[in-house]
Length: 98
Image 1 (cartoon, helix red, strand yellow):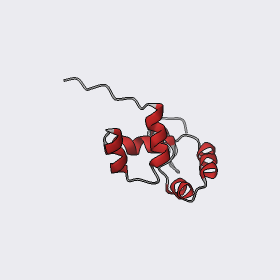
Image 2 (image 1 turned 90 degrees about the vertical axis):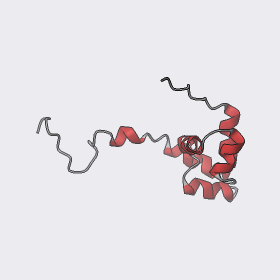
Image 3 (image 1 turned 120 degrees about the horizontal axis):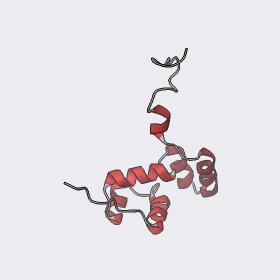
């Protein structure tokens, strides 16, 4: 059984998501774009509009401040920082040098 290829996001869809994520519900955006709710939530987190502080800034009309905050934060990839557990305080590798 083969999986269908994922539908790539166009620039227009990404821009629509960035412009409307703080104004509409995720379900409404998903219906308008014809995508699953989970895909919309994931894309919003990857482009940096999903966090509450950014949404609050956008609702208040402080778009420049929100974009500056997004640029300063950079991209976050959760599996890189937590996959192997090396960043956990007090972690001692079982088979490494001591």
